[in-house]
Length: 173
Image (cartoon, rainbow, N blue to C red; front, side):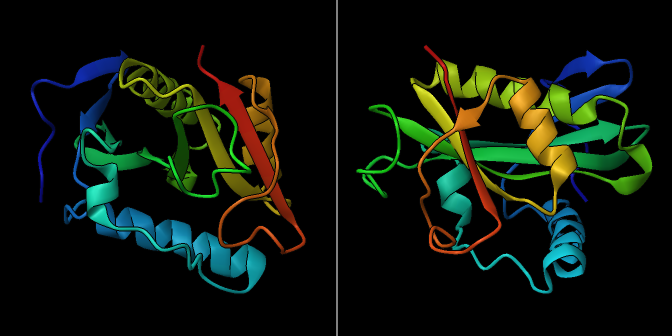
């Protein structure tokens, strides 16, 4: 198990965000939990292709949120330059993936902390737009992103032709 990095920052009382490789063993159970949410709400797992290297600097960034010694939240971004180029806004867009907070800690603002870190790190890496795809069966996610300044953007990616997907983006300029 990976322990919190002493270089991490405390961003909410007790919550520490630690840069973590997407392939780190501590990430796997969190990914499995979010996949189960997709199964419950949509009837299947998210099949979006993702590789650990996409979330490694300078191509991306991934964090795990630790609270009381437990990995409780995660999220990352990956560059999407050249991918769906005609659909994505900006010159250097990045996509948010695997934003998640464990069920027993939802409603405490942890997702806002993770999202703020993703925005900050993406901006520092020269990303000009963050985009994401979520679903209409995740109204709490849609509400979070909209309340943080995300707006509708054209559909992109694996689910671009599927009903029920919601595509949002935010300029970081």
